[in-house]
Length: 142
Image (cartoon, rainbow, N blue to C red; front, side):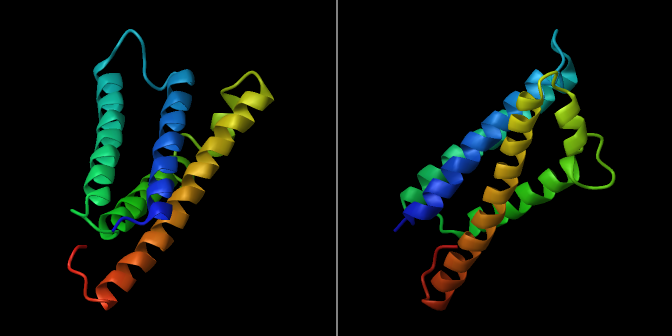
């Protein structure tokens, strides 16, 4: 049976991820007229959202357990860190903030990024705990 808190966390990730994609678009990371890099970037982002939706359907129908959500959250945290917090990134928080003429807009973009990262971290911990409990109780679905 699907855990409603985990479903809510994953849905929140989808919303925050969509807002983060919008932030990238507003900041001009997806060039218009369309370039191959923009098409690839938008395609990857759309693919991630499709996988989230498919995963939610499979999870709520009992086809997958919390394990894939723990793994996906770990990947999301890793890519988020590499993309915005590692010493090697080209788009640290200061860059994002400075892309906006309005400090309020810059703070909103950063709030969305930080909320996304925090939700990924909470989801990683929560899904891992559910996964461990499921394995301990002997249920078969990862």
